[in-house]
Length: 409
Image (cartoon, rainbow, N blue to C red):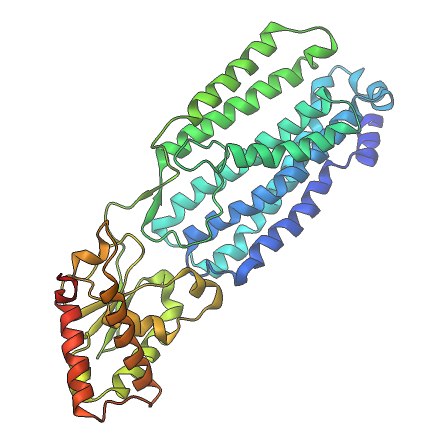
C-alpha cells in the first residue's frame, strides 16, 4: 500500500491523458474537419492524433521509468518481489491514459462521419493499429528511461519518437510498421490492405514483447549484458530494417469495384458519392446558373448528367455525361467554385488524350479556358451570346473539344 500511495503521488505518466486530449482536439478541429461524412477517412485522419501524442507519451514514460530507478523509488518498489511490474507501471499507465482518450475521440468522429457497415471493419482495424503504435512507444519510453540517465531520458525519448515515426511510418512504397494514417485527402476509391495491417500488428507485437522481456529482466546493462535479452532485440532491429525494404506493401490499395453513387434532380442530374453529399446542393446550383444563363442552342450542347469521380476513378463513356471532382481545397472550404463546375462541363472525358502519358497540347487548354470563360460569363449575365456569330463560334469550338478533334495535329 505504501508503494502504491508513493507512486500515485510521484508518478506523472498519467499526464499523457490530458495532453492527449489537447493533441486529439487540435487534430479533430484542424482544417475545418474536411473528413465529415467519410468515416474511413475520419478514422485515418485520427491517426495524426497518435503521431502528435507519441513524443509526449514516450517522454513521460521515460521520465517516470527513470524516476522509478532512483534511490527513493528503488527502496519502495524494486525491493519488492514484483519489481518488473513496478518498472512497467509507467508504460501501462501512460498507454492506458492516451489509448482511452484516443478511443473516446472516436465518438465525435463517428457522429460527424456517419459510419456504415461497409467500412466499420476497416475502421476497427485502423484503430487497433493506432493502439498498437501507442503501446509500442509506451514501452519504448520504458526502454529509454532505463537505458539513459535522467534528465536526458525523456529528452531522448521525445526526440527519437517522431524521428522513428517519420522514418518507419511515412515511407511511401516501403513497409512502414508505424504507419497510422493521417491522410489529408479523401480515401474514396481506396481500401485498407488487410495483409499490411496483419504484418504491421505482428511486427508491433514483437516490438512490445522484446522490450517487455528486457524490462522483466531488470535491464541487463545494470547487471551485465545478457545475450538472452540482447539477441532478440538485435534480431528485431534487423527484421524491421528488412521489412521496411519490402516493396509493394502499401497500407491502402485501390478498390476492386467502384463505389455506388446516388443521383438527384434532372437537366442536369447530379450523381454523387454519399460521403460527399454535402457538396451536391452547390454543384446543382452552379449547374443551374450556367444552364439558365446560356441560350437554348448552347444548353442543348451541354451534358445532361454530371457524375462525380474520384482521382484515378473511371470516367464517363458517353459525351452527354460529364464528370466532376471534389478537389482537396473544397473539402476544407466546403465550397465548390462555379468555375470548377464550368470546367467539368467542357472537359472531353471520353477523349483518351486527357489521361495519356504525354500532356494534352496547348491549344486544348486554350480552347477549354475560352469555353469555360464563356459559360462563367453567361452564368453572371454578361456573355455575348446575343450575337449569333458568337453562338456559332462557341458551338464549333465546343464540338471540336468534345469530339476530340482538338487533339489532332
